[in-house]
Length: 362
Image 1: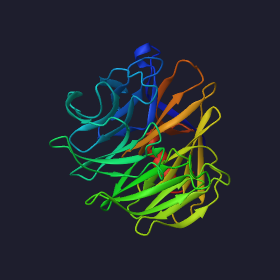
Image 2: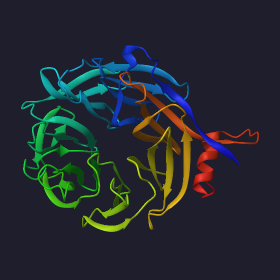
Image 3: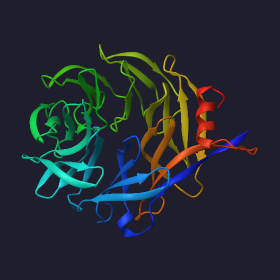
Image 4: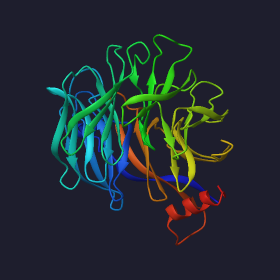
C-alpha cells in the first residue's frame, strides 16, 4: 500500500518575474526538456520556460513584453521537432514566433496583418503549422496555415461570425490530414454551444463537424488517431468518444469526473486529470467502455490548484497547475505525480507508478 504525492519539478519562486498562470495546454516537451508557457499577471511579462526534468532546474526562458490588451498575451506553444512556436497577442502585431530551443532566442515570426484575432493554440503536420484564433468582438473563428520555412501565411479557414462567434476555444489537433478545431457559438445558440470542426489541411475547408451543448468552451480533447475523447462540464459530465472519420458520437457515458479536466493518452492508456478541492485527481478510463477504472488523488493542503496542462515524457505523466488561492498573486507549479509505497523500496517511484497503472492494480 501507500499514497500518491507529487515530485515538484519547478515552482514559481514568488518573485514578480515568476508570477503568472500556465496557459491552457501550455505544457509540452521535446523528448528531453519541458517547456511551460506562462501568461502575464498583474502587469508582469509572459514567458516560456525551459526546464530540465532530471535536475529540476530552469535552463533558460524566453520573455515577451506584457501587452496590456485586457486579454491573453500568449495563447499557445508547440514543438515541431526543430523549433518551438509561441502565439503572442501584443506589440505591433499579433504574431506566431519561431524560437530556437537550444538558445531560447527568436528566429523569426509571422505577423497577423489584420490583428483582429486573438491567436491561440498551435499544431502541425510535419510540413505546415496551424494556428487557432478567436475574434475578440464576436467576429468568428479562424485557423491559419503557416509555412515554417518562410514563416508566411499560406491559407486559412474562417468559421464565420454567426456560427463560431467566440472563436477557437480549446486545443487544436492534427490527425490523418485534418485539423480538429473546437469552436464556440454560445452567444447565438445557447442550446448548441460547442462544435468540433474538421478542417481539411489541403484545401483549408470544413469537412464535417460535431456539436453539443454539454461540452464547455475550454475544448480539452485528445486523439488516438481514430477517435477523439473529451468530457462535458454539465451533469452527468459525460465522457464522449467521437469517430474522426464520420464526426459522429461512438459513445457518450456519464462519469464521476465532475470538474474541468485535461485528457492524455500514455502508453495506450487514456487518463483524465481533474482539479479538485485542495487536490487534483488522475482518472484511468477504458477507451472501449469509457468507464473509470481507477482514481488516484494528490492532496495539496491549503492550495487551490487549477490544472492548465499535461504532458508525458515516455511513461511519466507531468502536470502543470496554478495556485489561485493567493490572489492577486499567482504561482505555477510543474510536477510529476508519483506513487509512494508505504514499505521501503529501491525502485524508482515513477516506474512503480506506471507499472501499477498499466497492470490495473491502482
